[in-house]
Length: 529
Image (cartoon, rainbow, N blue to C red):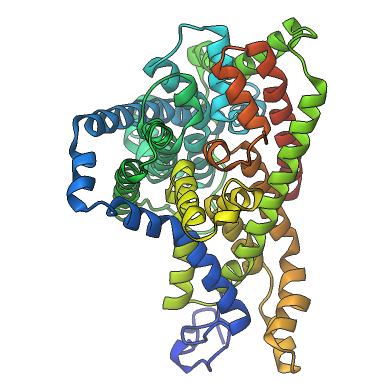
C-alpha cells in the first residue's frame, strides 16, 4: 500500500463493549465496576455536601429572609469590593504575566532561564505570608492597596505559566511573516502574539479571580472587607448562620458566572499553525535599546515578589529575641501541621482514586457526572466548606464538632480536584491493555485495580498526594473554623500573631511554613522533571 492510499478506518460503533479506545478509555456503555462506582459515588456525594448545605441553610428562614440578606446595602458593598479587588488584581496579573512570559520566551533576554524560574517562586508563598511580610514592613499599607498588592504578587504566576506554555508551543512563522510585512515589534505583538495567548491568559485570569474571591488570609490581615471576610464576621458575630449561608450563595453564584464566562470565551477562541509537523523553536528577538529596561523590569518584579517577603522574614527572625521566640511551641505546631496535612492528603487521595480511575478509563454520562461532582468543592472558598461541615456536625454528627476528623474531611472536600486530576493523568499514562489482559485471565475488578492499575499509576498518584499535602498545610479559613480547641497549625498561629501585631513572634511560623512546603514542592519538581 502506497503512502497515498486511504487509511482504512474502523467504525467505533463496531467495537465490542469494554474495548479500549486509542485514548485509553473504555467506550460509552462500558459501565464502571461496582468496586469503583460505589466509592466514587461516596466521594462525589462528599464533595457535593457543601452545595446541599447552602441550599438548605440559606432557605431555612424562608426565601424572603434570604433575599433580604442578599439584597441589603452591606451585601452590595461586599460585592462591589470583591469585584473591584478581583478586577484590579487580574489586570495587574495580566500585565505582569504576559510581559514576563514574552520577555523570557520570545526575546534574547540575558539569563532568561533563570528569570523563568525566579518569577514562578511566588506560587510557594501563601497570600497571608505575603500580606504579613508587607504589613510588617509597611504598617500603613492596609486596606484595598495592601490587599491588591499582596494578592497580585502571589497570583501572577497563574497567568505567566499558561502563557509561557502557549508561546513555547506556538509556531513563530506568523510573527516572522508579520515582521517581514514591515510591522514593528509592538504591532506584531498586539496583532499576532497577543491573540495567540489570549485563551491561555483568559484561563489564568479566571484562576486569579477565583483565588481573589476565595482568599481570606490576605484580606483579613490587610483589614479589607470582601465576601470571605464578611462571611467569617457574620459567622462569628451571631448564632444565626443563615446570613453567612446567604452570603456564601452569592459568592458561589459569582464563581459559577465567572467560570461560565471564561468557558464561553474559550470556546470561541483559537489559533492555527502554519505548516505541518512539530513547531520549530522561535528565534529570540533582539531587545536592542530595550535590553536594560527589560532587565530592570524582571529585577523589580523578582525583588518585590520574592526578595521582599524573604527579606522581611529574615529581618524579623534576626530582631526576634528569646522573649518572642518559643522553640518548643514552634516544634509542636510544626508537628501538628504535618500530621493534619498528612491526614488530609491521605483521605483526599483515597477518595480521589476511584473517581480518577473512572474518569481515565470510562466515558459516558456516569463517569462525567462523577468527575464534575468531585470538582464542586473547587468552586467554593474554604470558609463556605467549613460552614457546611459545622452545620452537618451539629445536626447529624455532634461528636465530630471541633474534632480533628471534621477538619480532615474539610481538606478532602476542598482539595479533592487536586488529587483527582493527578490520579486521572497518571492512569491515562498507563497502558489499558495490561488491565484487559488481567481481566481476560479471570482477575476480578478489585484484583485488577489492586495488582495492575494502582501499581502502574502509583508515581503519579503519589505526586498528587504530595501536592495535596502542600495545599492542606497552607489552608487557613477552614482550619480556623474547624480546628479542635487548643490546636494550632503554622497557618493559624501565624494569623493569630500577625493579627495582634506581633511580627517578630509570627516570623518563625511563616519561615517554618515556607520551609516545610518547599520540601514536597522540590520533590514534585524532580518528579515532573
